[in-house]
Amino acid sequence: MSSKNVKSTRVESELAGCREEGNWSKILELVEQLSSGKAMLYNLMVGEAKLEMFLEENPPIESNIAKACGGLTEAKSYLTESISELSTQSGLSIDSHMLLAKLCYACGHYDKAMEHCTEAKLNSIIQTDLQIRNIRILSESFAIKGLCQEKLRPSSSSRFKKTEWIEGVIKNYEQAANLGILYLQELDNKENQLILPSPLGGNAPLITNSNSTSATGSHSPQPVNMTHSLSILVETAILRLPLLLIESSNYAGAITTFRSILSSCEAHGSHSIRLILTYQFAEFLLRKVSPKYYSLPTQSTPSKKQLSNIRKPKKYNSINMFMPRSEHEEVILLLIISEAMAARNAVLSQSPEFKEARIRAFSLATAIYDLLTFALVLWGQYNMLYESFERAMKFSADDAHVWMQQALCLEAAGRHIKALEVLTQVIYMKPKAIVPCLLAARICYQHLFKMEEGLSWSQEALKREKMHSENLLSRCNLYIGIGAQCMALTSFLKSVKDKYHALCLESLTKYYFSKFEFILLFF
Image 1 (cartoon, rainbow, N blue to C red):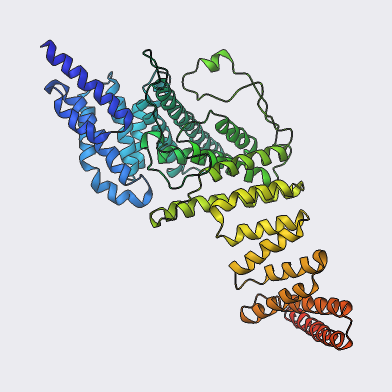
Image 2 (cartoon, rainbow, N blue to C red):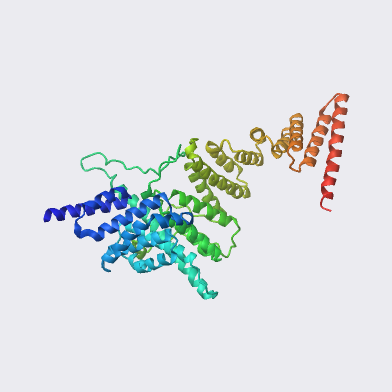
């Protein structure tokens, strides 16, 4: 009899380990070894495994609701049976309710999902000491509760009811964010313990995270480690939290929320969400937040009560931390951090299988560089901006937009020779674009005194305008006229002077009439 108990204890221990690792196929094998008296645990483990395996292939989003309603029938029956067999005092019944809430949300049954969240008594669970897997489930449950509240808006038009509803959603999202970040930090702490020096000498085997990338960017995206990534439900809650505060005009609260999440100690699996939040926070501050809502960040020492709170993620807190002294410093700091993370997460592999990941990473990086341009140009930091564009070239060498931004940056910094070289590359990459030709001509006329080359670029712009009009005909004729006049002034032969004077007169005449016709279009 004792051997059976030992075997049952060993199986339960292995099941707990597989739950934390997310090894659901192994769980389905192990549950067959459970004794007949563990039917309630059997139902819970089988139901959870089938639910998670389905959601890994079909995330809980609206487009997958119809598929979830048909594919989660078996998982629902197992989880429902586990609740009916377990007593209300058992902790397993709480897990069953939280998992059923997740299942109902995936199926679009938001009312039932809210009922299961209520049955689980989430606010009381958060005060207890939880295993790593339970922290993940609890964070998902708070996210589900908030998302369901957003779906089930109050029918009353009362301002009090609406405020109460918004505060409830925000509170649930805050709990989901704190628990989600805490879950990733606890995973890191557990793995770090396995890297400690061995008592027999040497080091323990190094555990690597398949989500990590090198400091210079990943050559190809690695397979996603589900245990080292946040659930899509928790990620949605974290992203919705500051946006909901902004929508409710609580700008000071949004700033505090952004800072609170970003000041949490970084963990594996949080890189992508931190990148998006850093970018969004910088964009929000760049929208000229009123000074009455903005306050400088402060370095506060956590109290003993906060340190003893096991449900809060760890924060960065050291004496040598850099603290921005103005709104502009904070914006530039956020964007520099975003740029570093975007460069690190860049997908360099050109394989077709990584096309979507490459496009997604590049789109976010381009948006960050555009914001960085706005922020740095305000302070005349052209050299810093140029260095950022140089780093971007490793994953955007084929993108004309980044080349064009780099050329404009070089021109503003007074590096006209280099700017002309970059513009030449842009002209080659965009055979229909007219503006780069005109910019190259202006640099030649105004700074490099290469009149013949400038005239050549102006004529190329006119040629492109006739083939692919961008309503720049008058500008092209003006640049040709300026170039022809400059060539006439620097020529010594009368025949050459007359030729360029004739071209100048012809071009300026066309410029005048084309501009006059353009004005008449408005009358």
